[in-house]
Amino acid sequence: MKNKTKILIATPLYPPQVGGPATRTALLEKKFPDKGFIISVVKFSTVLRFPKVIRHFLYFLMVLFKGLSADIILAQDPVSTGLPALIASKILGKKFILIIVGDYAWEQGSQRAGVTDFLDTFSVESDKYPLFVRIFKKVQLFVANGADKVIVPSHYLRKIITNWGVNPNKINVIYNSFDAPAVSLDKGVLREKLGLSGHILVSAGRLVPWKGFTTLITKVMPKVLAEFSDAKLIILGEGPDKTHLENLIKDRKLENNVFLAGRKPQAELFEYIKAADVFVLNTAYEGMSHQLLEVMALETPIVTTNIGGNLEIIIDGDNGLLNDYNDESKMAESILKIFKDSDLAQNLAVSGKDRIKEFSESKMLSELAENLK
Image (cartoon, rainbow, N blue to C red; front, side, top):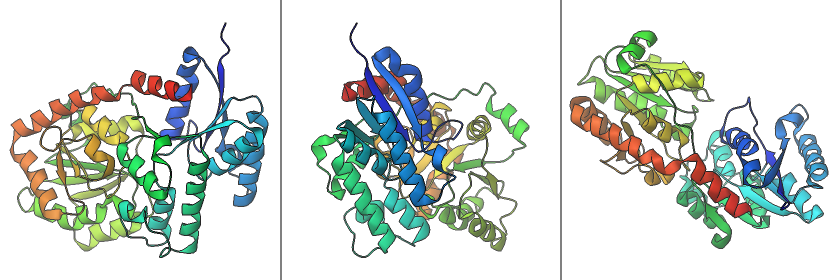
């Protein structure tokens, strides 16, 4: 019998934690043995109780020890797990594969240092940013350059990482898969269950500046309410901008029309999405939005931005409506168009459900297995 390839996964998240790395790790543990792989995992969560530098050193030791019996070390982010895993792989002489789903330096800079540049600009600039942001940029570039192969979930992210200074020939695009959410109740029953009425908009995501919730609340909703006074915007998620957004809602007296519903269990999140007339995402950055795929599976029309990986999912006018980021007039116009035209809404929903067939689990697993072999 042919020897199986042994893969050690260094992951920042692991179930019951939520997020792409956790979902992917659980999937590989379950499915990859049938494709000729033996999977083991080193979880970053096991060292989180220690101070930052110490936790990374301890994690490096764990990867080094477990990596002794591995053929490949696979890291699921370029900083917290990527740097320790790279160093361990070099010491052990093991192949090192890196999965990148975003720009960690840009995300940290946007949240903690007031970086306002879009990712396309940020990916080619450096000197003007604060020191810790420049350090993160250097770390993720060092780790990506040290990898034998880099895997990304969109052609947009391949371009971004090439902008960092990574050889594009070793960057492979493998679209994420997802399990299509199943919600058995119809829209009317869900609305009654959730206590919803009127024209319903749902948005979801981490409450951070680049998700564009400020514009959605202060600019887009007033334009929508001017024509549909019963419209309600429900924002699902938590994050550092929560207090700021609560104050905006109060200052503009939108308490009866805009609601910060917090983070919901996945099943309840899907119910809100299916109950909505429109799912709106005013985002400045998406590598490859797993959430938009879920929305299409739930047959809810989408209004979002022509940003990043969105262009690889949404065809404007076919399975969604695209606008520039923070273009409040166009975004409100797109929402109102769907409210007013039931045929358009239905066509967008049907086309969206057809589109998700290209993001199957079997396709992703086969492509990833081929890359690792």
